[in-house]
Image (tube, rainbow, N blue to C red):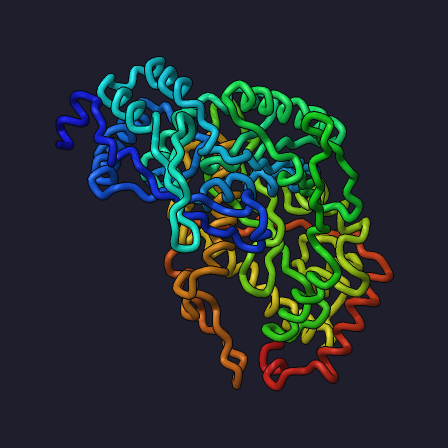
Length: 524
């Protein structure tokens, strides 16, 4: 029977009968018909046949590259995390370049229910899908008999000539085929991500006005494309988001057919967020008011053609620099990737947009980051006391020990990243721009695994401290990685009187109420 149906395209009537079970969506009004998801139940033989056809059609679409790279829904080897990682990487790239990323997240009204079947058949012919598969799909979906079951009884039967049945294994694949050319209508204006019928459009620019203008064009072109395919956007179910590190985020207005898309914005780093990080550093590392530690590392690369000594570091290798701010839990808060290895860390930090953000008050008053001697001493960035002005006092040595102890977090974070992602083991033979994206993706995945997997980072992987003696037990990552190199150090003399007072106040605290029993054994 299955072979007969496939070769002739003749579909038994029972296979084209669907029982529809309305399922109320979470948090929706039960009295509204649009609040229900309509799941179609078909015969067992029909499901088996659909599964067989789905496997063949899926191979054809994937092998020919018909499904666009922007589509991540219901594909083997793809998930929501893949599309999310791309979006987050682009957001972090925008932050590093001090740009805005403006995104519109679009809801397509009853997408599966409104697929135009003659147009679907036409597209299958245009894509040279085998005639038997095209005929089977067309005959299976046309003139379907619908029985709605509600409260244990069936409503009168109806027939439909459009749409894809929700609950069918074929429907997501057919929808991807139906919309395979969707991103071509807008991708020259911005970036597109799709997960089945969910669409995200986003644009990066230093100006929100320019980003909004391009995004408005993209949304209108997308709306026209959907209209031509029998689909439509629900503006009030869409949302616009402006991603920025800045405290003051400009308002944007994007319309669909004179209807304003709601804007959903939240300041990304509130005062409470920073205080939570500060509390974590005090609990784990006995260093109050600290929100993170900053440092940089060289990532070894093969020199690009005709680059001269641009990427050549003082250590004798070509590299690009990863500079990062790390929190108490070994997660990356901010990263800057791509500076040439020939640059000093002081110069990299000065040109990093976060430097200007810190000057403008990124951190609440009284909170700071920790750096080493390569960084300037500022009220928002503390560094060790140095000996070039004379011998250090005992309290100054204690402060330096406590700062060094807390800063081990950033060294360990780099070590974990390099040991887990083995592409960093040797010299990377890729374009610097590609390496930059690769490092951003690795940092994001590291953060995600740090939050979601208890097995990603075992206690033995990082440096441990004997709570009785203060002795450091080296983490296992140190034996696994050899290519990690410290940045070139240059003395920084850009210290302010306020920064010195803050450092002195912390020094006094560590030598009085904030002292730990073993600290005096670690100074000489």
